[in-house]
Amino acid sequence: MKRERRLYSHGAGSYRGLPEREAYLTFVEAIEGIIAEEQNIFWRDRGNNLPTHPGNADADARYINAKSTHRAPSNGKMSADRGVGTPAGVE
Image (cartoon, rainbow, N blue to C red; front, side, top):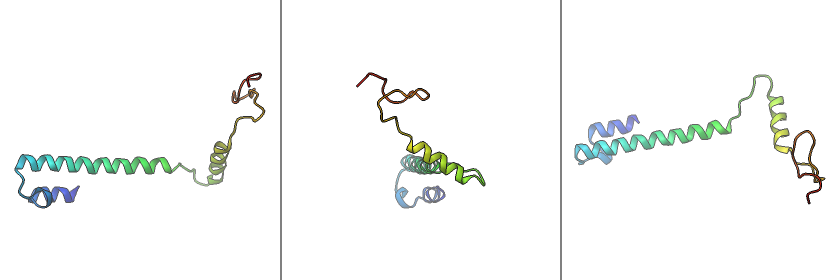
């Protein structure tokens, strides 16, 4: 953003020769684009990094593995404690 501001302030780069109003609108659009890109990077990285507790990384790994390997019962009957699978008698 600093670079974009300097270009705008000095009338350089894509701002060269533009009327003041058009240069300002171009500047605002460029800054909004930079902010949107930074937000995308922030949220993308935030979703990929699950928090780990100091000294408890093994427990976190076990929790993630157990969660990703859970499957519905293969016998086709409703699990009494979790409510997963298909109801008994339904084929």
